[in-house]
Length: 351
Length: 258
Image (tube, rainbow over all chains, first blue to last red; front, side, top):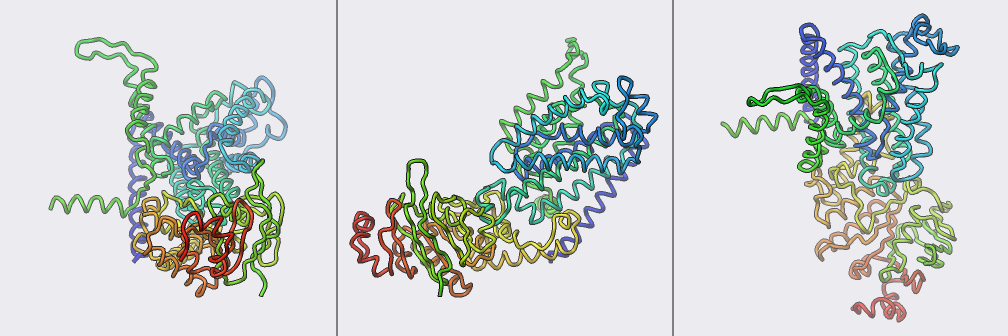
């Protein structure tokens, strides 16, 4: 009985993925480059929010790491894909340091190495932080973000300082971003729905009780943190090769702040919520651009006010926090059973 | 027959306060052992020391002949001591069955890579955990609530769920901290049957803290009484009932046990 349902769910998931990619293929051909760009950003946001949610929402360890990890992934991948000629042209203040200046590898291994480097740094950071309970993780990751930014600005022979890395090849396209997003969601949902995911949630719910269940809380927090870091690093590599230009200003605390908004609005602790939050944020912030343009409403001329978009966004967020504190999904997840049940109930009621 | 759990001269001090002074506990295999005493006697502190949540100021804890003093709680659970908490510590936002399945985590047979890639061993082990979890829920009588949120269960059921969850770690010894608190007479008599059943059918050794004298006198084979961190008596229920120091320190002021 359970197996029959599982097969049905797999078929439904496969069909919806095919439909998603057909739609993306259609949009990729016919939509404007503006829309395609937003689609790409949406997918990257999905990668970042679902992995951020793993540590923040599922394991319940308040962390402010994404901007640092995305930056590390982005810089690592970019430095690996740039050809020696490109590096010679970009590093105009000081030449690039020795082994880096003649390394050039293909895109896929470059973003994977970006992920691995990020994961290793996360591991090293986790060793002291997860030995103690409390909000140390937030403080340490916040500080680490600043360190990364300062490093990127001042380690000129490695990062080219404030000028950043320019003229990267635009390897990232809609297939890379959405393909990676689907894979990341697949992995994270698998992990969350397994015994490991239950152990992580147990740590969130009651750490002492989790320990009494024999769960090694240190290693499970570490697992969530390192897995999240790996995918955030990969997301950073994709982002770098989408924008083709990266510099330290791209990876300020605002990136983390925005991702935090997405996962809280979607529902902290829900992977579905993280995805919904990412989509709403990516499209919502574009739609709200309308607020910043001059308009004539009921014969009254309003000038375009720069920044109105963020003001509106903040108001929406405050309303969300007042009226729907658990976000859109709460801690619920999408399931085909729930989805089909919802529709069959509607049909039955009508009949 | 040697003692399965033995504590030697445990002293637990918090700053100036001595919560336990010189506790020597010896629990025999397959025994149902009761730890009683008025509030603040140091019973829960003793549990926390045995299960590794507190490191004693002085003294040693031996489990099956091995020194386990100062080990982390998760390592002690892996060695076969499971516990419940006085102030229920479930995972409230997880379902009842998920709560129990969490206890199986230490016996998992797949790595997290297998979970992420969803390889066959992951599905096989997960479904085994589910079925074993349902068996434990049946044992404590919570089958019908399997998919409810644990935090929404009534108090008595939450206590039973804590026992089921502790059993999932496959313990040799079970420490129950006030299992009958908040239960009505019907429920507590069911609980007594359950505790006896666990001892007889699962070969468990049980150490319990309880205020409900009907439960304590009804199932414990041996009882130790603490007062203000000091041992004041130990013996069979019959001996404890008639011990003048116990009646004076504890039973006399509350009620006289018939």
